[in-house]
Length: 486
Image 1 (cartoon, one colour):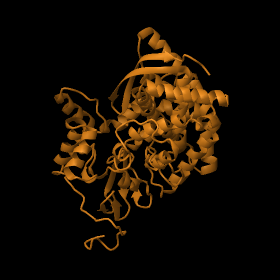
Image 2 (cartoon, helix red, strand yellow):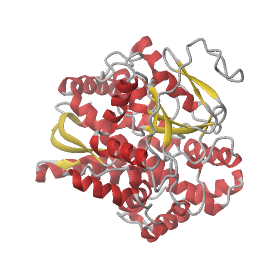
Image 3 (cartoon, helix red, strand yellow):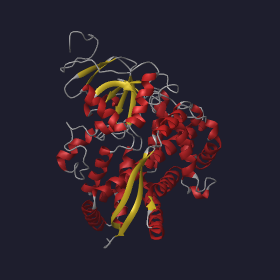
Image 4 (cartoon, one colour):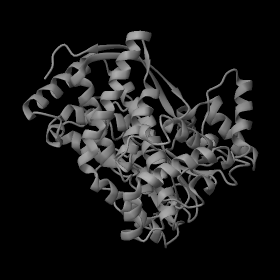
């Protein structure tokens, strides 16, 4: 470390350089940057342009929503695979109230509770809640595949019906319905159509999510004058909870009644009050699980569709051969599908469903990039844009390309430690002591089952894809049924 560095900081063999910075003028700088981020440059170009400007993958800038919603927009961006990983180190980075970055939605959206996602692992309640989640999932592992197969069958039947009558089918709506039904069945052992929620589950959760996350999104309006109007509308005031209070009450009542086995365990085994446990269950099911699936499944379909018919044939051949040999869709069968497994990891690498990670430095620390190091002071906000970290050209060959078999074989396996989609390396487990997604293994499993069930039923397909708000928007244009069956 250079002689100018503090002796109390960790040592490094790399040269220590100052972090490039351009926060701009107070108040106006954050607004300048958020207009660039959403409208004038766009998300990826915003970061790429600054990497080029500073010749550095680590720099300081402002992140949305900015004033007046967020009092401080300053962040230190980490945009390569090496520096990004400090965000996983709970001894160096605090995760208290940083789920949504530089602002915290009103706790009225979560019943007045700081739910597990807002807690740092050092907080005692985090251990109790995360342990509850892990226990809840472990107790339901035997339901993961059969419940999902039921929901997928319903989705595929509706997909085929719409293509038959309308010559196309909007996948997102179908996927959202399937995802909510699956999540509710898994946690509550009940079809939501048999409750007072009925078929309104996705709409109820969507509205609840939208009003919390609106300051972080954009509708992609044009002409530009409408963009500025949107910016004022979404980022001047946070939306008040009372606008969704009645919708949330419906969700709360349903999870409170039918999620009783989870709530009983929370009370009896982990000492968590029933009301707080219910709000956490809704957040786990609605925000983490369903909210993630809103992005996850359309994104997977998009990337596999764009990869083309040759990959479709390879996947169909592998999947059908293994299922025929194994006699069904089992964990053993799934683990033998090396191409399908690699396709899932490649999707999670190239287009991670949760692109942003935040944390505050717990101590003064040194963050290393590939060839230089940087000093970060205690209390500074650290931000990682995952799609750049997982497309680091110094780690991945042809990082911008979807390479279906990238993770096949021994060399491919070595790259898994640079797949970060779950708020942790893919090679690490989720525990009560870290912030890794509690359902990280379930997410990979469901993606694999989706591919398997799809290519058991169909040979190939075509879609039109775009982006709306936080998720890929996918419309099926053609769907070819399997020419042969297992």
